[in-house]
Image (cartoon, rainbow, N blue to C red; front, side):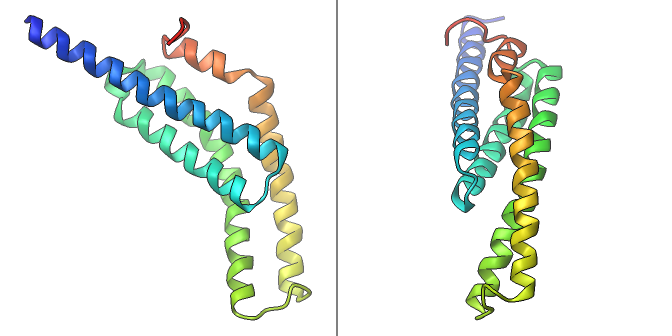
Length: 148
């Protein structure tokens, strides 16, 4: 292998790590924020952070341990699915409000109740992730146990 090729590969791996670590850090920040107040904005931002972290894992998969990528993405999917239910209800209620449907209307009341149930399920999934100390585990799985 040429020196130029080695430099490229080392550079690519370092770039991949930096980008993926930044997205992982943002994911855990948004996870913490959603725990404190799972409002519309927090749920939306959590979903965005999951998508971006998952995309980084997918894009840089050739430079990362394959089993780790699959496990991490699978674990995040559970939270993403729970957040999607809540976010879909938020968007639906917002659309109904724009159409002039009153907050006291039966459909909106039902949607708020469903959102609350979805929010509780989401919080449960978030608490499970936080209890597992996954940031440390995921860093180890990705081979980033040492300081970045």
